[in-house]
Structure formats: structure tokens, C-alpha cells
Amino acid sequence: MSDLTERRLSRRRVLQLSLAAAGAAALASCSAPTAPPAATQAPAKPGGLGGALAVWNVTSFSETADKAIGEVFKEWGAKNNVNVDYQLISSTGSEYKNRVTAALEAKTPPEIFFVLSGEAQYYRSQDTLQDISDVITSVKDLEGGMFEAALVSIGHQGKYYAVPFTVNPWVLHAREDLLKAAGVQYPKTWDEMIGMSDKVSKPPQIYTFAMTLGDDNDTSYNFLPLAWTHGGALQNEQGALTFKSPGMVEAIRTVKQMWDKKLIPPGAVTWDSSGNNTAYQKGQAVFAYNPNSIYAYLEAEAKKPTASQQDKDMFANTGMYGMPAGPKGSFDEIDVRGFAAFKGAKNPAAAKEALKYLVQPAGYAKVIETGLNRWAPVYKNMMDRPQWQAPAYKNYKHLMEVGKTLAHAGPPNAAFEEVITTWIIPRMLQDVVSGSKDAEKAMNEAYDKMVEVYKKWKQPIA
Image 1: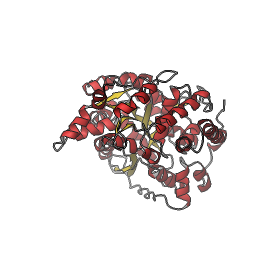
Image 2 (image 1 turned 90 degrees about the horizontal axis):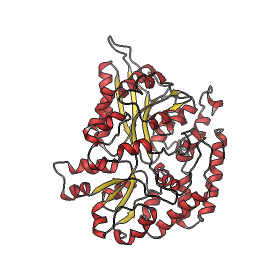
Image 3 (image 1 turned 45 degrees about the vertical axis):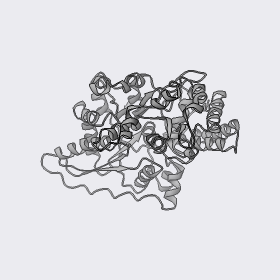
Image 4 (image 1 turned 180 degrees about the vertical axis):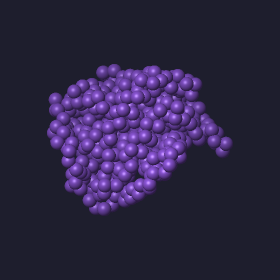
């Protein structure tokens, strides 16, 4: 929103613009976790920047991958006499959002913090991020160039406001052993998945599709690509709201059909972002749509010296595929994850230098090489490395080139991000699967809520 550009964030305004309604409520009741006070910046030491640097990251369900990122930041700190405080915060529920919002309100934000897809645009719209265009411009054409999706997610009007560290394809994890035993193959369409359900699942022990339906961003990440295959989208190419459409109604009805036929576990309406991971990893689902955090976890478990035969079998029998097709074709989804630097932190100069170090190919490669394939690189040529040539990753580079960000068909923007993080879509789907509203009524009510958000951010409505 342009009229926010030169305003300071008041307590009232920060709460209004909280990434999630739950986060705002938590702050109002003083229930949000208290953000740690920013470290006092120490005098500069000879040969380095000196001081302290707080880096907030979110958990990714892979300890090895999370540690790899922290080690690069700490390596930079050791070279520059900067004390790096690397914190991992739960990515489930609202904990991370609450921490960031509380830190902004208290004017004690971390120097560097994790951003997912449109979040960089959300904070940029509040004029709280450093412009790091010179950092990105100096590296974006190296190693074959960065994938376009990475640059779109962090850029606005020719400037850049975050460092991307992964272009993350979403894939349908599939239990190939269960498909083989049932005499069926990977479903090419949603109709095929629904049709094979009676053969592959045995509720309540095993369900067909671990689709997230709880108050969590992953619900939108699971639902919107399905909507694209039916001709629905939240916004068009110009970033105008287009949620209300016949295709969207059909997509909602498809979810209802899967629910009624017991393809989806009944507990899915209460899941956070770990719910579908857990269901699949425990052998309770045939399919789960997610980044490869599921596959990376299974690989890590299977390679442990103490791995059971069940651990090894789960890994060996898991395949990764693209999204099934609907009446309007098949679409694949990617998310872009990165780190941004707050303007109001204690050590902004150190933050910019640390981000520059992270994204330099030499140091960045350490994240890619040691992360057990959890992080697909933002540089195109790095996908040609041996670690990405395993059969399970045969389509990965293609998905990274053609995949759509969640904001499809338009660019990421603050209005879109607020719609996602206030859980309008999850609650719409919960109303439908519970039977309290039909698909069309639920869609219309969700659309009306989205209109208010788009108007607030002065974003167009088609």
C-alpha cells in the first residue's frame, strides 16, 4: 500500500496488518511468545564489522538442512567478528508469525528473518525491508542465472528486497508399493485418484490423500493448484482478484467429494503444516502433496545406522510426481524461500553483508550440498550436479522452470499474502466438508472477505 511508505508502524497499525488473524489475537491478549530483546551492538573489532546479528529461520522438517543454513551464517560471522545468534522457530501454527509481529511492535526485530513466497512483498509494502538490489544484481546471472520464479518473488519494480535460497517444487509423494499391490498406477487425473481409492486405502488405518485442511498456509498450497486444474485462480495476470468463478466452485466440490468418499483423513481439518508430513511418514496415507521435506526426511531416516527395515522400505517405495490433471489440464507448483533484512534492526549493515555472503555461489553451494537434497538451488546450473540426478528427482528441474508460484496467475503482492495467511481458504473448505455450507455459498462468502483485503491494499478486483 503506497500510503504506508513513509509512516512509522504504530502498535495499532502493526496489529491490523498482522500476517494472521490468530497472530493479532495472540498479541492483543499478550499470549504471543515474547520476542527476545535484540542484542546490544558491541564496538567494532579490528578486522571485522563487529556487533551481533540475529537470524530467525523456521524449521523445515530436516535438521540437516536447517543446520546447513545456520552454519553458513555462523561462518560469515566468524570471519567478520560478528556474534551470530541463529534461531530456529517452529513453522507450525502461528508461532513464527507471532514472533515477527511482536518483534516489530516492540521495535526489536531480528536483523535477518525467513520469508516464504509472498511474505517479502507483504513486508516490503510496509516499508520495513532493506533494499538489497545491489546484492541480487551482482549474482543473479551467475551459474546459469537464477530461476525466474526466485526473482519474481523477491522483486518489485526493478528492485529486490530479499535473498532467495531455494526454489521449492511441490510434488505428490506416492506409496508406489501400495499402488503396485492394488494393481493401479499413479493417477494422471483427480478422477483417477478418486476412482482408485477403494483399492488403495483402508480407513481408518490408511487413507488415500493426506490433504491439509486445517488453519494453516499449507491448506492453500494444497488447494489452489487443484483449483488451477479446474480453471479457478485467486487472481489474474494483473494481480486482480478473480476468486469467484465456475472453475473454483468445481474445485471446492472435488474436495467435498474426496472428503465424503473418505479419501482424506478426518483429522485433516485440524492439521498444521506438519500434519500431512506425519500422516505419510507414519504410513497412514498413500499420497501427500508437499515439498520434498517428506522425501528428505525418509531418506535421512533410512540412512541412519539404526534404521529399521520399515524405514528403509518407506524411503525405497516413495516416488515424487507432478499434480494430477483436472478438466483444464495439469499445473505444477513451486514456492520460493528466502531471507530478508529489517530496516529497524540494530545492525543493518552486517545483515546486508551476511545475506551477500549466503547467496555467493561458493558459500551457497554448501547449503545445497549438505542439505540432503532438501533445498533445490536458485541457480540453474547447480541442478546439474550429481546429487540431483537420482531417479526420484528426474523431473525436478523441469518443475522449477515451469512451476507456478501460489500467487498464479499474477505476481505476489501484499493483498494476496494477507488472504493466504488469514486462512480464508481453509475456513471456506472446513465449512464445505462439514456440510454447513454448499460450495457456491462458501466461495461467495470467502470472496467477499477477499474483496475487503484487496481494497485495503488498493489491489485491483476483476
